[in-house]
Length: 362
Image 1 (cartoon, rainbow, N blue to C red):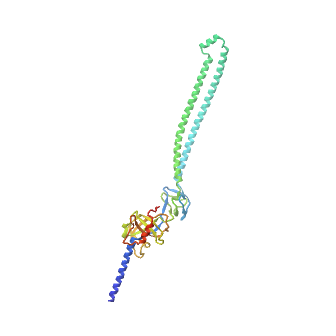
Image 2 (image 1 turned 30 degrees about the vertical axis):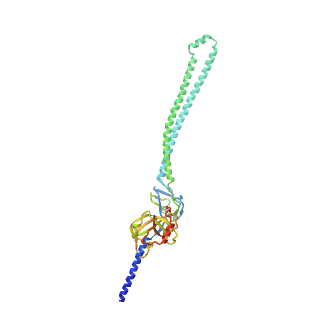
Image 3 (image 1 turned 120 degrees about the vertical axis):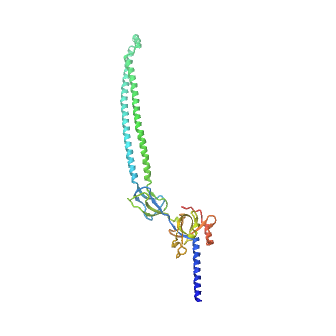
């Protein structure tokens, strides 16, 4: 009889234990845990570059816009050098041709102007001589009447000199105009080519100016993965950056409630040590399989439980520590806290009252 009583007692205790485990699992499925972590930002370059100078070291605090790494693209440097040589050659050749044409213009003007001065001098002398002769026979009627009938040699020579002057002046204008046309034919193509190369140079120099790596946000340097003087291929990691405060929470939803969580759901994230330290988060990622929940995030560490991994984004202006354990409470936009078997107390409802669902997520 005593033996049967012992069996009943053991059986009763086992039933109590199983009931406790079932309640624990149910509770865990309704209220689960995660840990806060900084989002790692891997910095790389879209070009193959040579590391010129590194301005930061592991763990260093940085501000947005700080110069982190200076790099050199040898292909761009080579291209800039080639373009500068080509531009200089075009400029020199054009300047040489332009100067030659300008010298021709000066020479033409010098020669023609000398001819014009000489012809004008002859005309002045001849006009004086004609005027003198005219004054000598001005009172003689016979000579005056004969002069009207024919042109004197001096008058013929004077007309010739004036015609010659007009021809020389016209030749000067024509020859200078031809040289100016040649000058334009040299300068315009040269200028266009030079402007084209200058624009291409400016493009490559702008790329060169933006090659260096600057801090995209305030935070900390994680691991610097390169060394000065090292050639780095495109898209290879140069360094890792972290924000000062955690920006994500990784948690595990118990397998019994995986369908209750979806992308975009709002969650209340609270510290397990400092319950007043809490923020509003949003589910941004869901795991694709059921995995074993880590021991630290189980309701009962000794009993294996399984669930789905989720990633929650939280505002950067929080007071969580890196890898700090936090509790996760799913919220419903219309009714607030989702109810799972009445396991949430009124204390949780009060918590929702001051939680801000409109906190901006970085």
